[in-house]
Length: 321
Image (cartoon, rainbow, N blue to C red):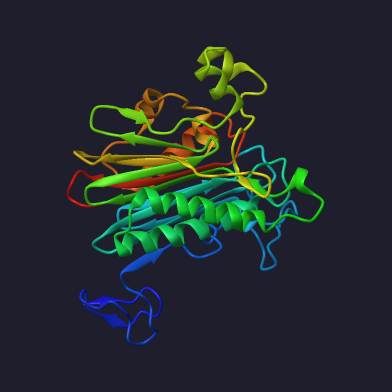
């Protein structure tokens, strides 16, 4: 016998809904608004926090709830961290699973130069993951669902804009994944990335929507020149009121062998830009949450100059996700 994750009432594996609270037992997802924070037991100075959230030694208040969040579901997990230099965490993640059918995940990175960037990214992931999980449950075409989810997230972020303030309208990047028994579909807008990790190596699945990537594709700059240019991270596409988005980029591939799908913000890949860099530090034989934690730790140890978000999906190679 199992228990309902909402009210803890006894349920059976065959039940679709909890008889006590009505929760859909076939769909599990991160909470709307984001997972709860991982509470800091002690302040950075070593002191403890009192009941009001202030350090008894230095008086500093407890870090905001978004500074470090983690969430774990069967077969996938995510970690999001403020990093060491940013004042707040403007990344967001949302993911879920439909029992017996597959999973969906979304990572969005709020654009720091825009207003309420953290709100933009959270609205985007919540909007998109709901549509993607509905598609997984109904068996809808994953590429079509990915397009619908990105456009719905774009519209939701666009509604956050203040009239007459388009130049600072809330905006964010977007990367998503829909994983079923036989295939995976990845969609993206901006420079958040997806990597496929197999038994013998890793491959990057996305191409950045940035000024640098565009000039590299046109042969104007080399990869090395683009990475060192101060405009390397200037976005050419994003979600928000001024995005003019018509569709995300997307790719679908069959799952032939076991492995991992890693979605991340640039707070990770800035330090691990090439697939082989990711492959070199990836822990082996551990749960998705341990992989996500280790990758975040790698970025923190390297400097943690930006927010860092990593979602890891276990791939079973034709035997379900």
